[in-house]
Image 1 (tube, protein in one colour):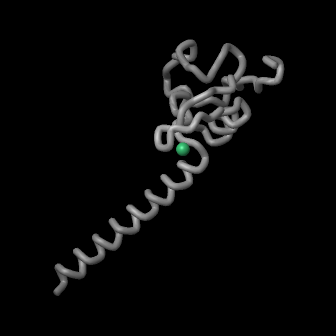
Image 2 (tube, protein in one colour):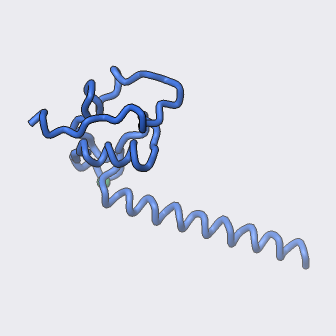
Length: 102
Ligand SMILES: [Zn+2]
């Protein structure tokens, strides 16, 4: 089982100048662990796999502390909510601008 865990490429990972790896729940020495977590939104039990973490940290360049807190479904909803909030904000700014011109 442990042999199947993806190895960490420390040259690709974004350390942000700190080396707290021994405290990270998702990392173990040379490997990413399959990390069990509870989604903060819906409370479902999830596994963040080592392969997903490798992609997240090494391909996307996410700093080591940024770990999964939401399940896939809640991430999708959260993204939609943020997009909606941004749209509201932009429309609000536009209305404000137009209001000033009148
Ligand atoms: Zn969820």
